[in-house]
Length: 351
Length: 130
Image (tube, rainbow over all chains, first blue to last red; front, side, top):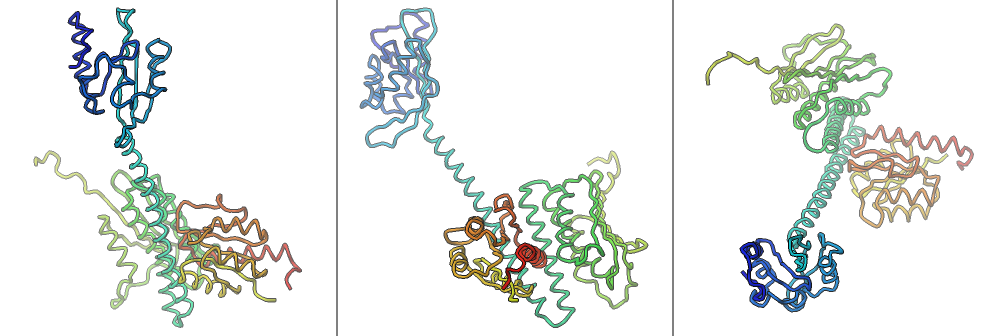
C-alpha cells in the first residue's frame, strides 16, 4: 500500500479505505482538492510504469514524465473537485516516449462523505486499447467476410452463366432433335439449381420458407421450359412450412425433375394442361407431390430403363428418408414424395 | 433496313461470345466490349447503338451500374439491360426504365426483353430508321 505520510490513518475506516484502493485490480487513484495523489492502487503503478514510492503527495500532472499533464484532464478533475462537473467516460490518449499510445477511459467522482472540508476525488482508469483494437479487428473481419461472400456468389453465378451459355449454344448448333432436347433439359436443371442457390443466398443461414422458394423455382422452370403459358401452366400450392436449407435444396431438385418429366411426357403434341406442385407438413411428416392432368402413365415396357430424372428423384427421396409413390391421377399422373416419421413404437419399452 | 445494334459489355470472353451469339440469333447486330471504358469508346465512335446489355462486375474505372447511369446521362435514348451475379442488386439502383436480371440469365427471357425494348424505340421514333 502506498499512502501519503502526512495523512496517517486516524481511524480504522480510513485505513480500510486506503487498503481497498491499493488492492484494486483496476487502476484507481484517490486525489485531494488540489489534485494531489493521496493513494494509488498497485495496478495503477504497474500498468503505467510509475515508481510507487514517489506517488503519494505528488500532483497527478507531475507523475511519470509529465504524460499525465494534460490541460483538459486537469480542468475536468478540477471541475469535479469543486463539484461543478463529473468526469464520465472521458477518453484520452496516454502518450509516453518510446511507447505506443494507450487509449484510456477515465471516470472521476467527488466522494460524498462526512468531512465536508477535505475534498476527495476518486479517479478510475480503464485501458481500452486492446478492446478497441479487437473491436476494430472484428469489424474488419465481418466486412471482409461480407465481401468474400459476395465474391463467391459472383463467381458461382458467372460459372453457371458460362455453362448455361455453352449448353444453349450447343443446343442451337446440334443437328439431332433428341440431343437438343437433352441439352435443353440440362439447361433447365442448371437454371433451377441457380434459382435454388440464389434463394439460399438471399435467405442466409438457417431455415427456408418453402412457399416463396417453390413459387420462384417453378417460375424459373416455366420461363425456361414453357413456351406458351396459355397452353401449359404450373400451379404451386404450399402451406406455411419452413425447413432447413439442405432439405429445401433436395426438395427443390425433386420438384425440378418431376416438373421436367411431366412437361416432357404428359402433354405430347401441344396438348394443353396444368401441373400442380403441392407441399404440406404435419409435425415431422410431410408430403410433396407433383401431379399433372396429361395423358397419364404409359404401360412400362420390360426393356425400358428408368430415365435420369427418375434416378435423381429416387436418390434424393432416399436422402430425405421419404418414399416415392406414383399413382394415376385420372386424368394424368401424380408422383408423391412422402416422409412419414415412424410411429412411436412400444410405449414404455425400457432402454 | 439494317439490323438494330446491341452493345454487350462483359469481361468474361466465353459469356461475351455467347451473349453476342444470342443477340445475333435474335436478329440484332452485336458489338462486344470487355469493360466500361471500351464500351464508352465504342459509344463515342458510333451512333447506331440502340441497346446496351452490361454485366455489373467488371475491371476498370466503371462497373456496370455506373456505366448504365453514365450512358443514360450522355445518350438518353439508349436502352439498358444490366445483369449481375450478386444477389443484392436491383432496378432501384439503375436509371429508370432499365431492366435488371440475375446471372445466370435465361437467354429466351433476355431476348424477349430486348425485343420489347427495341420495339418501343420503333414505336416512338418511327421514321428515324434510315
